[in-house]
Length: 305
Image (tube, rainbow, N blue to C red; front, side, top):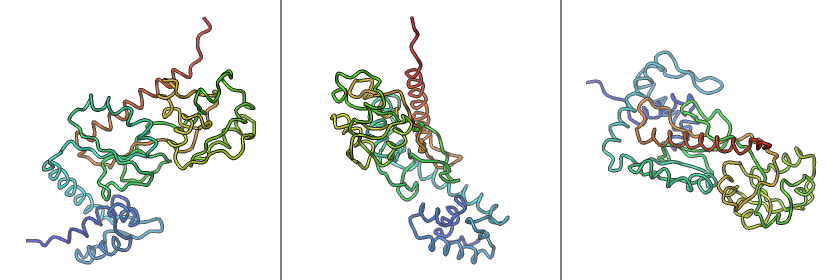
């Protein structure tokens, strides 16, 4: 009987092969880059075959390595599928999202998801940090950024970063909307980590006349400050849609700035994705498409008659 290589070496080879990078594999596995490289070298030594060629931008398969990785990856997929059938909660799906996305979009829509999928236990992890699918035990992630996110990930576009200016109705009571650029320039500003006010005001051909303003680390905090009447926040239109529809916020002007960091749903590439994970993906996509249609209808000019 042929002796199998160490499992840690095979796991390191599987991850390095999917990413073609020891660094990305180390992030996934939660070990150092040197550990991954060492485990792969030991695997190559035990097999007596070179699996990777080291190239300036990372790794490249040798012909033998490519063929071996295809079968090793299939074997790990089978192991994951077999393990999945033994879980006491097979319909649990872990989703990592940012605090702003969770507070302003996902949580308000969760009752609709629960009604449509009563057997799926959706677990939400909120963090600004990049999550590791294997290391953190998550199935899906929603992140704001720019592709590429990695060859091992399936990337699905959800929302563009179309940014609008919003405030509580009390902040602009008695003023006619939309505000003219100069009036907006004098209102107190709420700044978040994206720092889009300079670009927004530059597009309107004005300078900020309001002073320093309040600076916050997260967009959700800027929205909460706007809701309490402390100033004007810049926020992606889909995140403010519910508060605007329920008259807690008003859009102050028609100008929109398109940011560089859109919202994406990320999932591991897998030929055998679980039904529950696919159902969650389909729900995210369909809900995003429906809201996009509503937002587009709201931007259309009204008929004169």
